[in-house]
Image (tube, rainbow, N blue to C red; front, side, top):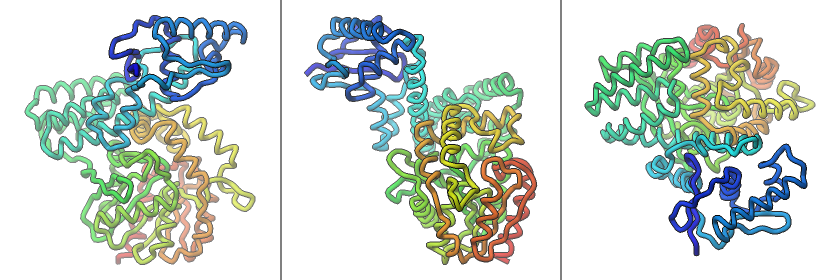
Length: 511
C-alpha cells in the first residue's frame, strides 16, 4: 500500500512514500488538502465552483478535468473519480497532520499535540481568487488554533507544576506568539524564564511586550506584569486544577471565606484569561472578599474538555456538583450570569440542601422566544445573531452588545478578542450556543425554595430586562432589583452597584 501524507499545519506539502512530491499547481494542492480533510467523496461541481467561482459551468468542468489529469500524472493513482464525485483513493495509506493533532488532543496527549502543531493551518497559502476555499481555511484554522492554545496552556501548566521551567517557558513562548497582546501569557513566559535562571531573557520579553502594547494599543503593561522582574511572587491568578466526572473540568478557588460563592458566566469563559482584564479581576476579587470564590469552565469551552460533550443545562448542573465536590464545598451561593443562570436554577431545584442562595444576573429562563415568552430573540433573530458572532470570531466579537461602555477601549477589545480565541473556536462555539438556544427551565422556577436575588440592568442589550422580571415573577419570594446601565457583563460599567447588592444579599444569608 502506497504511503501518502499531507502536511497542512504550515505551508502545505504533499509526500508520497515519504518523498516530497513536486507540485507547482496551487489549485491542485488546494484540492488535495480539501479532499484529505473531507476524508470522503466531494462533489465535482462543488469542487469546481470552489476553485473557479467566477467562471461559466462548462469552463470550470473542463478546468477540473485538466487539473485531475495533471494530478494523476504527477502523483500516480491517488485519486478516484466518477461522473459526480472525486476522492482520495482508499488504497493509499493516508496521513494528515491536522487529523493526527486533533486525535492527540482528543486522547489528552497534549505534549504530542504541541509537537505536531508547528504553524497555523495552511499558513500563508491561498490558491488565489477562491473566496469559498479561503473562508473554509479561516474557520478550520481558527478551530485548530483554539485547540493548540488549549494544549499549550495545559502543557505549560504541567511543566511549571513539576519545576520544569525551561520547558514551561518554551510553551508559554508559543502562546505569546499566538496571542502577542496577552499579558497573562507574557507573565507566564516571564515568570518561567526567571525561575529557569534566564533573567536577561525575561527582561527582553518584558521590553518586547511593552513595545507591542504601546504600538498596538497605546497602553503600558499592568503593574503586575512590570513587577515580575522585581518579585516573581507578585500577585497572580489562582492555580487551575482539574477534576474528572467523565469530563475533565478546569476550576479554581480563590479566597478563604466561610461562604462559598460559585460564579458561572455566560456562553464563553476561560478561568485564566478572565483574570487578565483589570475590571474583571477587580470584580472577582471583590466576590472573593465575600467568601471563597469558585470558578470553572463548563464542558465545551475554556480549559475544560471541548470535543464531543454537550453543554446542556443538565450536564452543566452536574458539572457544578462535580466541581463543588472537588473543592470540598458543602453549601454554596450560586451566581449565574446570563446563560449561566439556567444551570444554576437546575442545580438549585435539584439540590436545595447544598444551595444557601441563588443570584441571577442578566439571565433568562428560555434561550429563544415563544408565543408565551417574548423576552428572548426569535429563532430567526437568534440565527442571524449567531451567524454575525461566528463571522466576527477572532476579533472582539459582540463587545458592542455585551459591554458597550468598553467598546471604545482598545485594551478591553484586545482582551475580549483574546479570551474568545482561547475559550473556543467559531465552529465549536456555534454548537455551544445552539444548545443554549434550546434551553428552557421555566418549569423549574416554581421549585426554587432558596433565597433568590435577580439583578438586571434596564438597558441590557444582550438579554432584555423582561427576562429578568419573568424570573423574579415566577421564582417564589425572589427579589428583583433593576440597575442603571446597559452593559451585559457584570464587571463592566458600574460594578459597584452590582457588588453592593450581592454583598448585602450574601451578608443576610450568613449574618
